[in-house]
Image 1 (cartoon, rainbow, N blue to C red):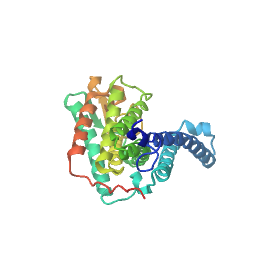
Image 2 (image 1 turned 180 degrees about the vertical axis):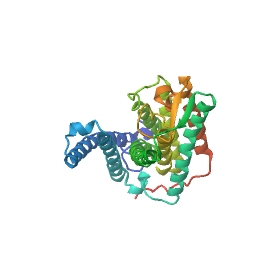
Image 3 (image 1 turned 90 degrees about the vertical axis):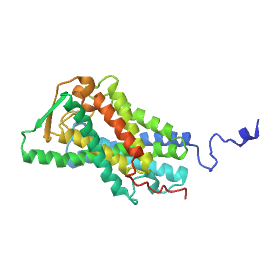
Image 4 (image 1 turned 120 degrees about the vertical axis):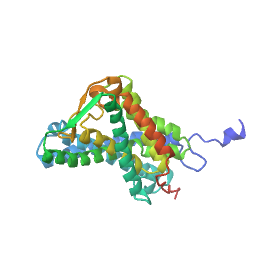
Length: 308
């Protein structure tokens, strides 16, 4: 056995911490356990507050809130615990604390996310694949939809970013294998959408995986979750609440959007009933937006805390 092999420790790295693969495995197991417990507790709490059975709540919007709430709480708590216990890192390393430039990243990210979605919609509009008209629902209903849906999409984006661009991506980035972190977060992110309604073969997986890369690049560019969070929520909100399009195949997330969309095809471009995320227009928009994020000097890079 060579001295190099003798020096190698299968469990502990050179800094005295558990190796990234073991850290990842511990996070996944702990997250899944915490997720189940938290979801049950949230459903029981909602059931008590609303005087309805957990089974009834599970099929309503409150059930969705409980599901995303469980994801957010579990990813936050387990991620924080793993980085503190396994890597001796403070809470700020999780990327969701307030740091210099966080608001700038959030605001620019929110503008860029919506602009990227509008660009994809523009591609389908100039080719006459999608036609838009104003929703006749009235100012009051549209205003309520725009406001309430912002809260919904902010909450959902926070949960997904904490899970997919949180500890898993971050700990593998600290291990200098960020490419693996991008792969292991983008592929499951895409796979999680394959059971959505009106899935488009090929495009659904490719575009959602590409969206995962887009958001991961935003984290790597800033070492903070504020930029990907801004991109994520505003893309979905602009898609559903402003343009009246399905979000990942799900209809009626915004009951009275500003505009109503009519798909005229071809579906390979527009995404058909799945929405823009199932077509080539989305692919083009995400590729361009990813390059802009990586190359533009608009964002503030957070100071990543070192081991304490």
